[in-house]
Image (cartoon, rainbow, N blue to C red):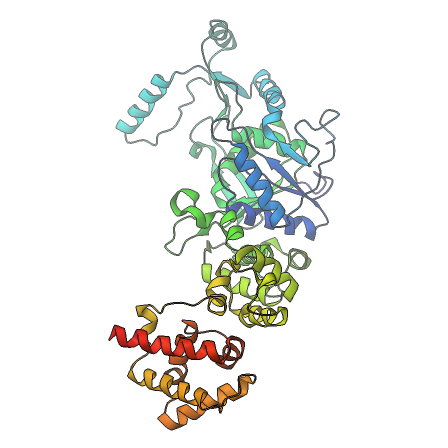
Length: 502
């Protein structure tokens, strides 16, 4: 790409509204944002909604809401130097809608036909099927054999006048190697003979196909750098051929590794369902900043900030050449690690905003505890949350009674029951101060000394009996908040349930 081919760095994201907002789409957008910010450039949003059968407004809205939630904003394209007075398809929201640009796309199709760089192919479906069957019988790679390339202008006009259906194909010419210096992968070369023959650029319905439309739109939006998934590598070769046919300046390309599952499958909506959708993480109570950081961190870490960084921080020292070439591996545990870190840094009012959305308990209008106690409860489990959807799992025993199930009862063995009996006796003796956490802790430790127990064997039976959990805040903290009466009630109930189980 000539240094002066484009006035400034411009990148874009161009999702299709044919399904839920995919993690991979967001991840690609984020790398485009980092690159643009690093080079004081611009980042644009284009909606590639020309697939009339599969594009749906509900997906458009989900995509836009997802980007808004993630706080990914975009610039509004200026009128390009080589376009009409306005950029067709540009809305007040700064989004270019490809479906509004069909007339623009078709005008370039006509130009290529007139210049002999594209042609009408009148081959029928039956003829093409027969061609592929013959190739298959000869054990050849199945591809279009360019049979209509040599059709004369007169013959083409005659068939056109007869109303015979046709598609338009790009004339790739003699076999040649298309080479580009990929920003991530280095030099990439693809021979045009491996592209499946002259590609269709316009259907018989008049709809211009993806590879052609995207070139026109990127040209008129003056996109200088195209960063996208490595599954587009073969498309890049076809698009460069279109750029060359139209004598357009060719942008720089960079192909990002895809997100794979641990069993080495490409993360997809069809195979992996909700885990591929951004909306899943929004509805489960992940923080947008954590998801953004995780997606960037799958293939890139900031040299300055390490694993934890914002978009602005990540752009400071961003180097596209530092992006890993290896597939990114979807790792929910790593995402949870990021989310816990971000949750741990929230102040109480910020946490309360999320808790009010995800908890069934009305914490701000609660008769069991005052506001200070509620704050203590929430802050006690703050660093344990993977996501806010889990909030009630961590705090429910403060607000409602429970029945122990088999999995928790089994932790109360014979010596566990002895610990509980001793704890009840200690409470009833009046030697514990239920306003002092240390008094509770010291009391439990004294039981351990008496029974020669420590660690889980000492603390688990009591914890399970009063909370139905095997982990959580300090037992002294729980006991002080629940109070003497409730603690004794739950300890006795646990003993009763244990005896019934046995």
